Amino acid sequence: MADRAERPARTSPKVHEAQVVRTERLTPHMVRVVLGGDGLAAFDLGGYTDHYVKLVFPAEGVTYPEPFDMDRIREELPRDQWPANRTYTVRTWDAAHRELTVDFVVHGDEGLAGPWAARARVGDTMRLLGPGGGYAPSPEADWHLLAGDESALPAIAAAMEHMPPGAVVHAFVEVSGPDDEQKSVTPDGAEITWLHRGDRPVGEALVEAVTALDFPEGTVCAFVHGEAACVKELRRLLRVERQIPKEQLSISGYWRLGKTDEAWRAVKREWNEQVEREQEGGAA
Image (tube, rainbow, N blue to C red; front, top):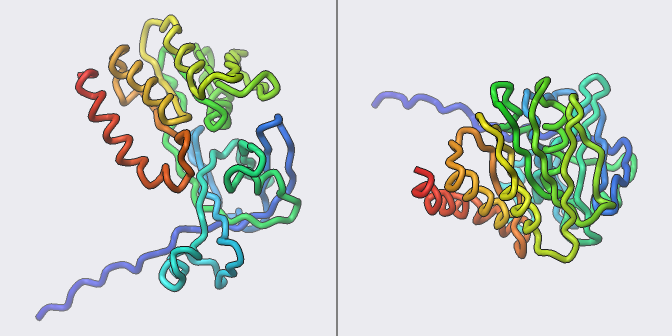
C-alpha cells in the first residue's frame, strides 16, 4: 500500500499581543483605544479602508497556557472556557510607531468590548487576530456612496480620508444625536451628512436619506454597513430598485437589533444568503 502524502500541519491563527498606549473619549458613545508594543511587530495592513481585527477576550476567571494558541485552547478546554472574539475596524495603523487605533461604540455596561474600552488603562493587554478586509474606494468610480450607523463610522471615516482626488462623495452616518458627530472629510473637503436618530428606530433616518438621494450619473462604488434590518432595506434599494451590480457594493449587517454578538454571528451567514436569494430575483 502506497504511503499517503502528508498533509501540512494546521497552524493556529496568528495572534498579536498588544498593550494599551492611550485612550480618548471621542463622543458620549465612542471611545478610542490606541494599542502598541513589540507584539505588533508582525502586524501589517494592505490597501483596504475597512480593515478589521478580531479582539480576543478571555473567559472570566480562566488563565490560558502560554504561548497563547487558539487551536490548543479549543482542543484542551471546554467550550465555555474559550475566549470570545469581537470584530472591530482598524481606524488607523501607524507602522512607524507601531500603533493601532480602534474606536469602540460604548453604551454603558452593554456588551463586552464597549465596557472593556471604557475601562481600559495604559498597559492593559489585548490579544488580536487579523487583519482582514475587502473594501477601498475605487479610483475608477464616478461617485461614491458611504452609509452606516455608529458601528460603520470608523470604516466610513477611513474611506473618506482615502478618497481619490476629485472624488464625488455622498456620505451618510446615523448617530444618536449631535454630540456623537465627529469631524471627517475627504482630501478635497467633502463632509459626512449626519443624521440624528433621536427617539426614532435605528436605521430609519438612514434609509430615508439614501432613498431621497438624487443619484448622480455614472458608476457608483458603495459601502453600506450597520444594523442588519436597515442594511437589508438599503440593499433592496441599491440592488433591486437602482439595479446596481453587486460587484460595486460592499454591504453587510455589522450587528442586528435584539441579538447578542454571538447570536447574530451564529445566523449571519444564513440570514445574508436568504436576503440575497429574496432580492437577487428582482435585481436580475
